[in-house]
Amino acid sequence: MKQQQTAMKLPLPLLLLLSLAGLSLAQIVPRQSWCRQPLSPRLPRVAVPVRLIVIHHTASAPCYTPQQCQQALQQIRMGHLLRKFRDIGYNFLIGGDGRIYEGLGFGIRGEHAPHYNSQSIGVAFIGNYQRALPSPQMLQAARTLITIAVQRRQLQRNYALVGHCQTKATACPGRQLLDELRKWPRWQPKP
Figure 1 (tube, rainbow, N blue to C red):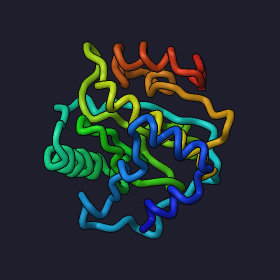
Figure 2: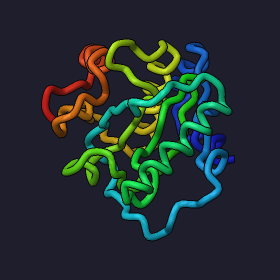
Figure 3: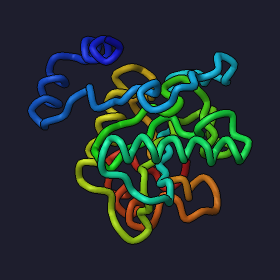
Figure 4: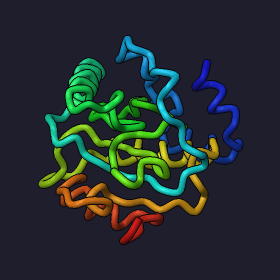
């Protein structure tokens, strides 16, 4: 139902364009499908629309099926909880199955990029992209998510796109993925 409401908010030309490209707004998999624990209502919110998309990789094994991706999400969340995060740190994650998985979702402050969490949406590609690129299907899923975020007014139209390594000293999101992001229209050298 929520996904249908999202689709209804998008202008018809954009919906047709997404449809022609073989994309579906149903690619967003709700959190409750992979995590039994609901989000705490006490999690801090962000003032929307935010100005940044921060791209990460999980530096873990990739996943290729919905079952593998859901298991990976649970492992990532447990790892974040062990690190004393309030929940999974990312707002959304992109699986090797081409689906967008809701982590914290829109409007919740993530724990993915210190000093930038309150002004960003954190998107992580499941896998390690130091030496290889995510699949075209995964890259398109990220573009679709960005389009949805702008349309839903969760992300400013003039947003900036950065890699995690641009917010702190880290190899994330991996050399190959960062090189790809530099080609995207809203990529910025500084957050």
